[in-house]
Each structure stands twice: as C-alpha cells, then as structure tokens.
Amino acid sequence: MNIIIANASHSIYAQEICLAIEEAAKVRGTGIAKRQPEYIITKMEKGNAVIALDGNKFAGFCYIETWSHEKFVANSGLIVHPDYRGIGLSKKIKQKVFEHSRAKYPNAKIFSITTGLAVMKLNSNLGYKPVTFSELTEDQVFWDGCKTCVNYDVLQRTQQKMCLCTGMLYDPATEQQNIPNKKIKESTFKRLKSIKQHLLLKKDKK
Image 1 (cartoon, one colour):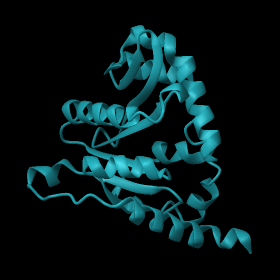
Image 2 (cartoon, helix red, strand yellow):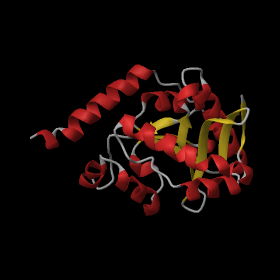
Image 3 (spheres, rainbow, N blue to C red):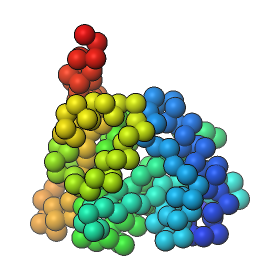
C-alpha cells in the first residue's frame, strides 16, 4: 500500500473518490460529505490531498481545506474503499494528512466536526480535543457546506452554536507550550453523542 501526497496525475481517481464519499455519507445518514470531481481535482493539483493506492487501484483518500485566511485547517473527506476497510488504513491516511497539514500550515489550528465515533477516536489520538463551535472557524463558507446535511435544521435552530456533530481542535500552540493532550476514551464520545442526540432531537419528536 502506497500512501502519498496526491497531485494532478491522480485526477483519474476523482470520480471514483466522489462516489465512495457519497455512498459512505448515505450509510451514515448524512449528505454533508458530497463533493464534485472538479473540487477533488483542485485539491490534488494544489498538493492538498493524500491518496492511498494499492498498485493502480484506489484504496483511500483525504484532503485539506483552509479557512479564515489559513488560520484554520480541516482534514476532510476521509474515505476508505470498501475493499480495504478493517485493516487500519483510515488511521494511516489520517496520520499522513495530519502530518502534511502540520508541515504545510505550521501555525494553523486543525479542526474537525464529525458524528463518527471512529473519526473522533482518531482525532483524539492525534491530539485533538473536543471544543465548542465558537472555537472553530467563523468563515461562513465552511458552515454553508453543512446545508446538504440532513441535520442542518438543528444547526440553524441553535444559531450555529451546536449540532449532532462534535467539534474537535488541534492547537499547535498547545504543543509548543509542552502542555500534554490527554487521549479521550471512546466511551466518553459515545456518551457525549447520546446526550446531544437526546437534547437536540428532542424537539423534533414532539
């Protein structure tokens, strides 16, 4: 398995990557991850993506987005082809794109919003910590990307203060100050997710 920084030559995989992301979003019950091939190709051409290849076969992918004049960075669209799931590939891709983000944007805060327990655990292992949405980018273009999610009404109802997603943030200043980041147990994320679902979906059930 070869996990590398993607470039223009990998644009031949863009359509397949988009289909894989869309199918995974359907399984999760959200539409937030839907992307167009042209968007993925742009990320590749700028060197803002990581791709995993098994020979010439697409195995996994993740890309970098920058917000608030590069003060914030997000590692988005993490996807593993169904044929390569369950072998720890997502962890390796996440590590690679995180290291690439740190090298290319050393002063940026790296953040994530997700409902996926597996992604939360991966983020925690890299040094991310759960935060409120107020600590993330204020760039409205980022939040507009949530409009395709089935839970967008929840985000609107709370004036973008919270949703079913959990916000997570890696702050390079924490590392520079030698302040240790404690890894958070998956059970904690499960409990947090359960509480948020109860509170935020309670109104819809009335």
